[in-house]
Length: 395
Image (cartoon, rainbow, N blue to C red; front, side, top):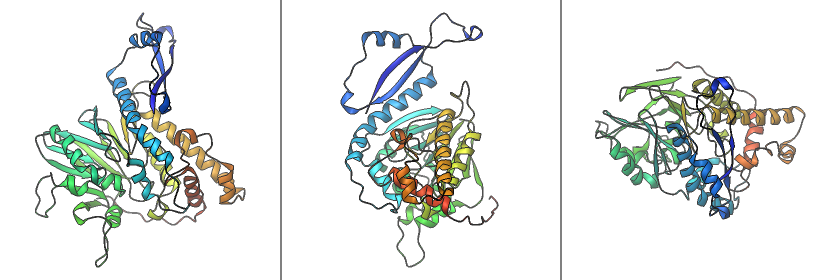
């Protein structure tokens, strides 16, 4: 894909908001197909862009869009060529491998405060760096570990101290073992504290006598089972909140002073939520997580700026982006719920295409997590009998 400037139009402001004689313009930026990549802006468009006022925050947002669209071009072309080899009941774990198999170079983008965003290693990696060392939220794919280490080493003279895993998917925990080796030495032979909700540890490990899906050195060694876990690192309070969503073990991480939230896969603006029913995920839990994010995010002006949001995948986001995604999930949930109440079968719901108006943005027709698989997960999630929830107290 390439980014194309479709339209630039003058923004009219009420008299009380006009504090400059210089005209303001709003950009309509859309994604163009790969074969349009070489189209150039007209001379008149260039003149308009020269007149725009770019704030540091706008520059960061546009930079994030540009680098992600560039990196995603090859991946999108490849994913569309992949045939869907799995059935509708296939587990979504393979989706992460397909989604990241063709990622380009790593890019480090400073967000605000002490927090940066590392893109291209699988899932997005959040980096907090300071005088005490480095903290990571997720570690990307195992194959990208060396490049992740190369990217984060210059950010602090002190070692890596903490890794927080937002879930147990390979593109979020794959680098735990190798990246963790650059951390501080501990008596338990781990180079870093790896924090996660307890069910993430349960799925990465295995009972005695059975083979674990991940190496022991990659397992979390500092789990929590309550509603949240608090840290104070690099003169900043870091809060890790348990929020069931795509699985029952998702975590959301808030950097209070930097005003940045790292969401993991609860919020992924690149596609429909990958709901893993076998791991305790549900459409209602995803929606509860998005509603919680909406309450946590505080916009600055006109829903722009303020709290910055690093999603599980995709570009750097703000409050408006979370609101748009939450609205989409709510509408799709309500549509399928009404179809279930009217007695429609799964096949009839899929045939009715309840996501059709959103498919150009979030849909997939091939690969390991298609639109039909999402619709099926929502259908089965809403059709399942609710189970009583066990309450637990935070540690």
